[in-house]
Amino acid sequence: MTARHATPANYRAAATAGTGRGATRHDDAVSSDSEAVRALVVAYAERLDAGDLDGVAALFEDAVVRGARSGELVGRDAVRRMYDPVILYEDGTPRTKHVLSNHEVSVDAGAGTATSQCVFTVLAGRPGAGLGPILSGRYEDRLARVDGRWRFVERVILPDLIGDLSAHMRG
Image (cartoon, rainbow, N blue to C red; front, side):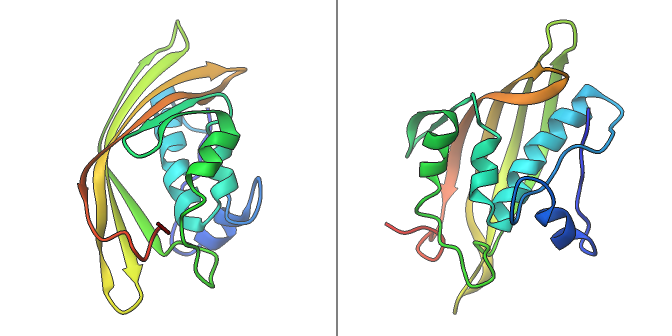
């Protein structure tokens, strides 16, 4: 069970460690399965905010992602295509910050399965418009422990409030 949470001082170094530019890692020791599941959910947000879209997709290697706009996507390549419209700025990031809250994790250690639900709010630094929320909703995840590491099995993305995404996504 492992995780790394970047602090402001080491965020860029942590963000570039691992699978590629902008990737975050979740491989430092943690004390429980619940922490490991939380760390995986946080790794998704950190990778996306760092502009590591390939790293985001890698988290869903053998998973299903369901969303109102995307339908059902299976596996890394399909999930990666979902992020093709994301606008990356000159610093390589989408200029976003995912804020996760109300995070609930339930683990069945014997079965090696878990569920996770949380609320997300995406803040964006939009050119000419300043900082503000652009999207809020819920992630509902099913996970499994495979070879000692937690992996996503399914993610359902449930947007509740959608703002101006024009500086975040094409089309």
